[in-house]
Length: 128
Image 1 (cartoon, helix red, strand yellow):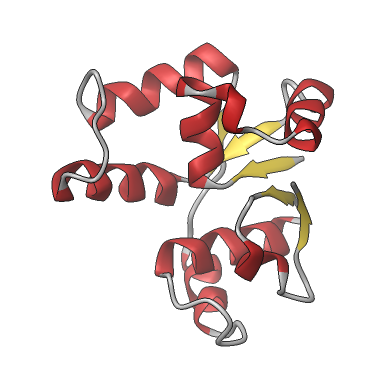
Image 2: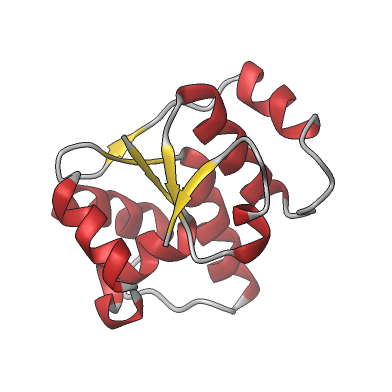
């Protein structure tokens, strides 16, 4: 099971040239077992509302389209993951990334991410 970091979702849907060769291979290998977190939908929506991301449709429509077009499945976000995100080492302060890290750890998923700070966490398995 592969959990996609938010930039990976964006690049998969909009600019696959930004994906590493390892990421492309993992996406092909795990097709049908690629997961996204609802926290990524929130992060994308916040980027649009701040004007740092431009999408051809609303964030709601875009996220739904990206998931359908690429066969991405939605992993749950619950209180257990939320609480676990607060117990992580203080390597990364971004709450969106901390939720993704906690999700990957709690669910035994590989986190596909280019983020070097995320890759420093000892209990999360990452690929890039």
